[in-house]
Image (cartoon, rainbow, N blue to C red; front, side, top):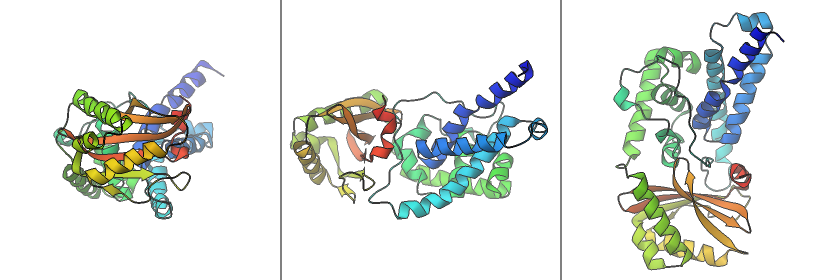
Length: 305
């Protein structure tokens, strides 16, 4: 292989991190994101060398193909999730990851509307993305998060730039409607720590005090492990549910503080094996949402740590 070939291969493979970052936010699943990126590269390497050389920007080509693959997958994912046993929660990420930010020199007309990459990976944000249409989600993530122009987004979504602008605007309204005032990370961590201690002590009163009266717990077992099939609402019900859960757990259950999708969270381990990951949404001094991922297929990144 020549030096030019080495450089070309290096340039292509260096895009993988960016593509995984994009695909995860589009699909809400690290496993599905990796499959989408693998398919993207398969299509690149299926082309002849002259065809590859004719592509002016391989990175842009890879992004376009990955975006289209994800758009197709989002359509079929909706049907799969309708058949899913219980509630479906995006796959949790173990640690905050430094992602690249999109094409150099690109910009949007409304920078104040743009969310950061860190914000776009938290669980509350990903859950709202699930309520969007596939086209809304793709247009919003590509434009507002990764800073692609609407002309570039239009090539991926297959609509006009004006239509993509409307899609992103609609998605932005959904995000704004769901947002709560920002809580400093240190304060969030303190509340999660207090929650862990109260849970471990089976202190129902303390748990109720930390939970918003209208708090909600959503669990995702995927039919592969025991988990509530429906959301649990209300601080008292949640406190009793969690205490009972801790009491009934077979073996030795330990709960540790970890970063989950860039925010303070908890990881439960049973005899050294990760059995659940808990993500939180906190408003002020109270927990408003808890997302409990128990599906072992979604915990693989955690069990290999």
